[in-house]
Image 1 (cartoon, rainbow, N blue to C red):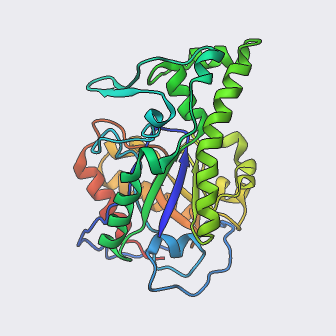
Image 2 (cartoon, rainbow, N blue to C red):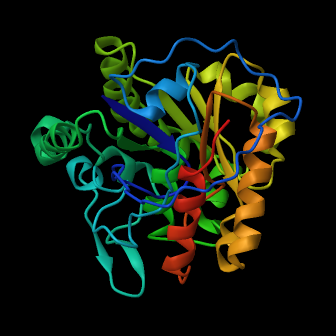
Length: 310
């Protein structure tokens, strides 16, 4: 079983089967008035994450963290770009660098449709190997970059803090049509494969992460996804209330919390899980792991999470 993950931050990864022997002795009660769907009988043959997303009766929330890409793995969501005639490289200390940033209609015309079978057959092969390796002990995630994220990289020429170039395209006449055409190419290439996969495997959950989307939460379920991942700027209880009980949520501990003490990390985990309520919740950060985060604190995050009990 795989999970496609559409996001607005750069990341490409598969879940690892983290194993920790620590079990926290005290039990927590996750009840903060959150609206959750009626729980169903658990399927013991499926990974915990899938059972939780489907609203089955699980003993604790599943947990994983974003942003292994570029930290511990030499891959990210830009993998499809060479197959669309957009060459790039990942430069040490700088991150992804686009050799020929897109700025004109002629540039967009050179962008070709992405065919994963031709350009990245190894991705499917790797996911298949992982699926067999972890069996049902862990879920395997496949990542898909959202169109605006991909467009931001290829227009800016790499990572950006202010996104001034793509904003210039978005708000300048007639340049905005260049951006629209580029977004359409990314949307066509990515979405067609994504929904084809969903049609083949209708039981496959889709997770959507859109950073800074707190003002648009009510619209996100309209995309047809199964899980909305909240960033850390949204209160989990409020997010649950606004999204309703029919959709699962993911998140949303502030990544900065992992720089705190172990007691502080523990308290924030408990607070998030209580606000999320029982069921249909994947414990995660509200964004990717920050560079320099102490690894022992990441380990503690998982130890506490795996010791939780509803």
